[in-house]
Length: 221
Image (cartoon, rainbow, N blue to C red; front, side):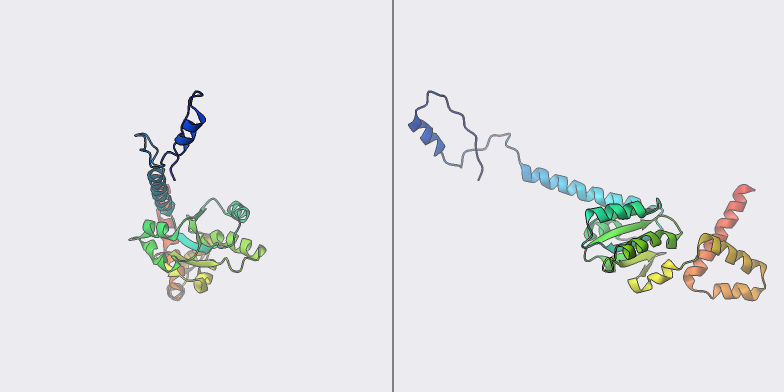
């Protein structure tokens, strides 16, 4: 019920006062009556758009995007978790619908199977994937948060279900990739063939490392 605040002169009689209090609540609204629902709707829409833009900005230079089931985690646990993460990773809590709106039509859309439940989103902005994932694994193990596992991730446009995370967590480091590539190039051709027959994810890392090595040598020349 809308309430209009009324003031009365001290000269008004009690009877008149009582009559004033029984005025119909259907009084006409002043022209400047605040329209709060409209304001709230505008603020809500603005916050949603801001969240979508935040997700898009974190996707720039992002190598891996992972969903983490955060149901049951406390605010303090989130704060503690954020402190354990390296600067190259960002942890964002956002609604599935808003995240999907940001990734729709991009290579990250492969994360669609994770668009259910309560998720926090881990943006990894480095190609050192294992070292970026490890802090959460350690946090999960230390706090005994077995139910708060990775729901899935996208790397190089491919979706990795929880059962496939070992492939991401055991990827070679950049130093290991360099060593493997140099060893293959300096050894008989059979070693290079062996390298190319390795799992696709390792071959990609090896080739990327070699391209980067050539670029660095070109820039330093």
